[in-house]
Image 1 (cartoon, helix red, strand yellow):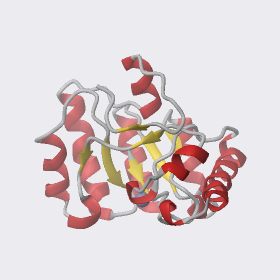
Image 2: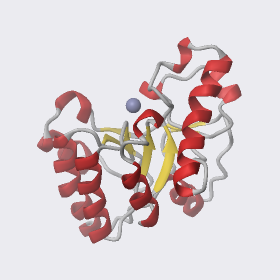
Image 3: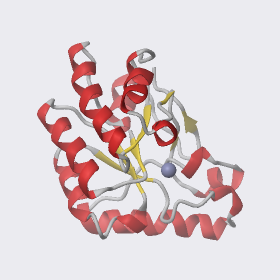
Length: 193
Ligand code: ZN
C-alpha cells in the first residue's frame, strides 16, 4: 500500500514496475492532490490497482468534529468517483489516528498495516527494502508512501524480489477476498493473514 500520493514522478515509476511484474497495490490517496495528478489515478485503476481514501487534506481526523470528518472523506470519495467512476471503499486514516467518531461516521473499513517501513522517516532505499524483505509474511499489509523518491527506488527493488519469492502482490480488497474476510465498516484491520 502507498499513502499520501499521487505524485507525478514516483507514482508513475511505481506503476511502471507494478505493470511489468503483473502486481497490484492499493493507493490511499489524498483528495486535494487528485486533480493535479489525475492521470496517475486513471492509470492505476486501469492496471487493476485500488484507489482508497486517505482524507482530503491529511489532517488528524481525531481532532475534527464528526461533520468535518465526513467532509474530509466525502470530498475525496467524490473526486475519485469523478475520475474512475467508483468511490473508494477503504479508508486509511492519516497518521493512523482513529477514534470513536471516525469509526462511527467513516462508513468504510479502516485499513492499517502490519509492516511499517518508516520510509517517510528514513528516506533511505536500503532501509526500506530491508524492512520489507526481512519481515514479510503472507497476508501482510505493507505501509509505504509514494511521494518520496527513495520509496520509489525501494519499490522498484521490493516488487521483483517479492515476486521472485513467490508472493502475489494484490490490493487490500483482493487480499481480503482471497483470505475470506468480509470487511466491516468502522472496523480496523492491520493484516489479513
Ligand atoms: Zn498519510
